[in-house]
Length: 173
Image (cartoon, rainbow, N blue to C red; front, top):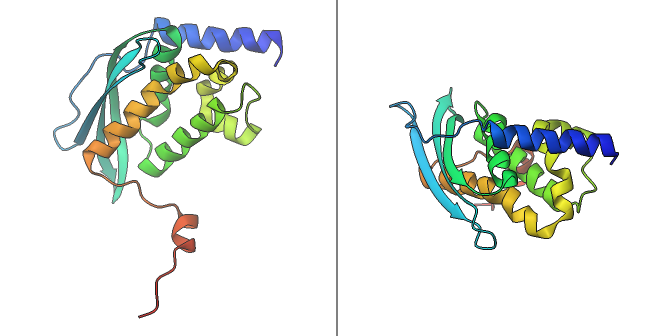
């Protein structure tokens, strides 16, 4: 990664840390299903409480809103801010795919992902350099762990992807 690209990525993280999106716990719409999770990174003391509100688009569960409160390093706070932008308005299958792509990015040791997968991450690609530092990966993943747990606490299941459904076979009667 070039030095100018690293500087751009650092600036994205600093911008999100200074002006975090979704900060401030709010209740979702009255007709939304809500879940909340509190996560702590015991290594450094970062913590976040994340609340997710789910609605539906037709019959598909959709993230209507994400709000959070937290404290910690700029990486953990910026990561939750970017997460908020990426998942709000998305259906749960898309949210799951983005979360898995971000986790994959954190396991590249800074090498990054292919262009298509990085494009799907938007500002979250700024965390590519974080993957070089194992101690900081947990900081970047903290909000994502809270999101996964909060969605699980809603009791709403993530719909199976078409490819997963196609590979599922039923036992003969």
